[in-house]
Length: 336
Image (cartoon, rainbow, N blue to C red):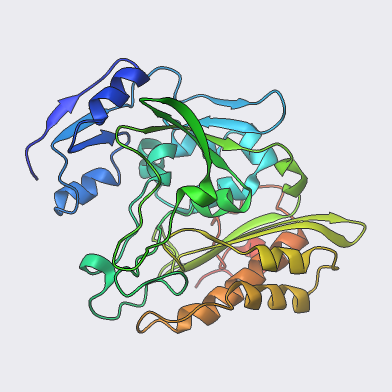
């Protein structure tokens, strides 16, 4: 690991000023950054510790509806918060499927969102690993965003609050993650020194709470990155889908939401046929980036299954194996 300077500012303003210097990086839980530093992928000259900045770990309901989750809130606290469970249960399900309890107690919301997209080989272009992207990739960058948490957030239309030298701004999470362009790898839309201070969930998401699920397929039923995943949420009125949300994980450089698939679902009665059609539409532009054509069909089936489970209803209690297709709550036999 390279040598670095360690700073612990007392305010957001001091943190932004310190991090604006070339080579600086923010340190929160460290569960992602320290891994990258140990293998030489990240080599910051200065670490700016923001874990003790006041007020950034607060989870609160907003007066007009919606939720504000401080960027330094622990993943474990968010996953068990009563407002999150009541209004956005698939967000909790995704968090609980994403890591061990020890990591959830250390990892913070901001760091989870800012995870670097991963490829098994340097640059994401050598060899033909099966985990690589099938949507939105280029020859120069085939990596996928690893976060479970961000998939339902994008589905629900969440945004992020960002502090910078020029003040604070909000950006839709869907737009915060870019796609690679030509020979350039994509990164979150942050300027020099900018600090993600909060996650904002919009008003009205509670309408999806009764029919919302997250499904994750991985190499083993443990805390591993998703091969593919899907977050599905439906608002059902009188036996008809009034609104729909669908986002996919593990398939692109960012969580992948498809407006056309959501529009197709709206106005129809829930059925296996319409779910399969919507899933196929969501993957209509998919193409393999190596030896991973199987991910396209796997993603279609996962999306259709997530929609079917959402239509069946959110479980009254969180499943014993959150997001796993082997959990008894999914109607599948227990893993043997």
